[in-house]
Image (cartoon, rainbow, N blue to C red; front, side):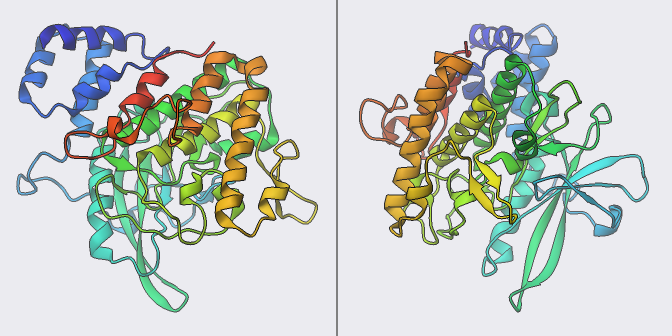
Length: 397
């Protein structure tokens, strides 16, 4: 075991270039001997990162009665004024007693009839895990706490939750969503865009490592702290309906095409056909990788301020189809075709293969390089993303 751990630590030194699935597997081994072996490994940046991964993903193992401080916070600790991040549901605000300390506020959006007592543990457990993350390693901001928000929707009292994410002082404000950048299209070197794609893949991987599904991966939930001439660090947000991978799913959806194009066909419409699983997140990742590779927004704005598809994404006829399944399948075919036709000459074959692999991760047949669902389940039957990470292990051209 010591040999394998040392090898994983050595591989972490090449973190920015590729992602080794052995790190994912080591974080999931529930054994104190792994942590003991890590202490014997020479301390460097790589070994610290691996230890942080285990600490973060295993942060719920400490019993509640051991003096742990509650992750829930009083709303008065945050200033009332907040600035919305462009094309996003996240806001930037500051602590009341630390007016120079910026935070990102990210709110849930559970259905009105969702029992508070059911989702509160989901929110608490995710917040605890995100409290231990290294933002630059995981592409996820550190969670400083959660606020309960009581409100009335359509005449019904409901409770939502607002994550408080710490914004490192080294990052430039204000941030922008990936959607904002895709629509504005500032020109960045291809290498920076590929690095952005890698950061996003790592963010999704850690959410899955923590045994959660995200359910809302799209450019509006990817926040980038950019500078005028350079793409800065990116972070995955938008934990609107987060839940553990093995928890009961809700089959609520909506008919908004601008959200549905990021959803697998089996998860589109008001009443999706399939229960949500990790591969659905992988599909959403694939759509985002396609947009990053093309550096174009699939959601544009017409003269009246309405949302319309990018003119080179040929889905207008599909959107007019009243059959939900037919419409969803046609959109997926258009995305896969666009990836195969346009990406190779822009970002190379390997990036193209990774993107199409994500888009076809639930397909039947030889084109699905992830294999069948049985190969993606652990001993408890929970879907995991190991195959997806193995694909990410191959760097883009």
